[in-house]
Length: 77
Image 1 (cartoon, rainbow, N blue to C red):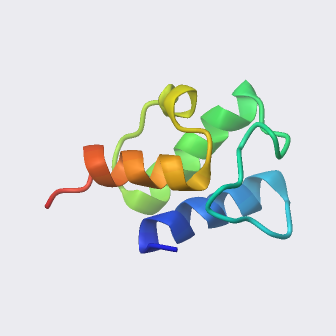
Image 2: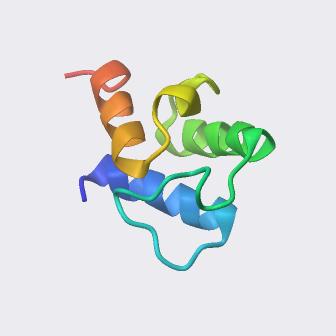
């Protein structure tokens, strides 16, 4: 996993209390809901120090999709 994927996976794991997270792990299939999605956005904003829209989980529900979105949209190159 990339560094961003690892960070997202750790946030999924911390929030959802799931022992194993892979790049293909889906937030909602693991038990996430809209309330937890808001918490996930806050956790990732704090860890990445960048603003994230809560709507991100409408576009990207897996670790890999979310990391790709973050890398493509928010991380300067």
